[in-house]
Length: 128
Image 1: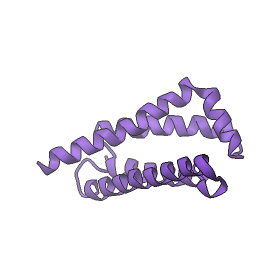
Image 2 (image 1 turned 30 degrees about the vertical axis):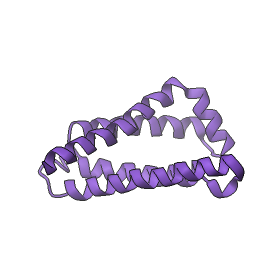
Image 3 (image 1 turned 180 degrees about the vertical axis):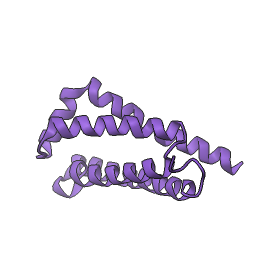
Image 4 (image 1 turned 180 degrees about the horizontal axis):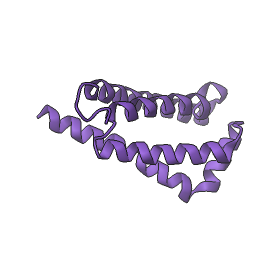
């Protein structure tokens, strides 16, 4: 039962990154505008890198390959995204509440990735 639950969680986390990774390319201009609104730099390069990384890491999770490494790297990406794009402390009212909700939701995703990395760290497929 535990292995099945871990597998379901791993697949759901993979989908959480795969679909947005694809959408970064499909809705390129929207994502560029979002990043511009947050004062980011090297926006096209960072957006492309994030999209490719999310897709590749998600595929690794789906295939249960390099699971610990992919989880840790995705966790680092979540931290960067949280600080740079969900900076609720810079907003007030509804927008601030919305960004805080996204920030806290991403902490849950971060926790899931860390648990998956910890659980996968001893498996034979975690680093190959």
